[in-house]
Length: 87
Image (tube, rainbow, N blue to C red):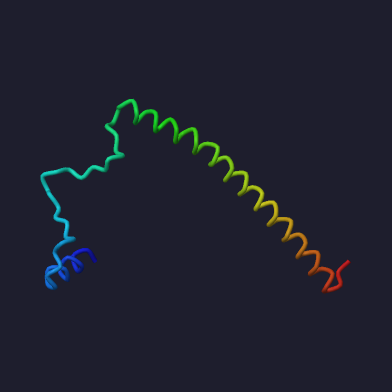
């Protein structure tokens, strides 16, 4: 897709917005941290603190859904028994 856009831009003469890749410069976002740096460690610690409660909440929700599913299946089974007249 990027190649097609680049080709279209060069063919139409609209080269103002073309960005060329510099293979000598490593691509690095401004938010990337050096491994082992203090801010990287703090960032990892923050994500650990945030993700653990989220993972626990997800587990609790999955358990609640499973219980509701069992309850629904039980109710459907009872309805079916009532429909066919089994007592």
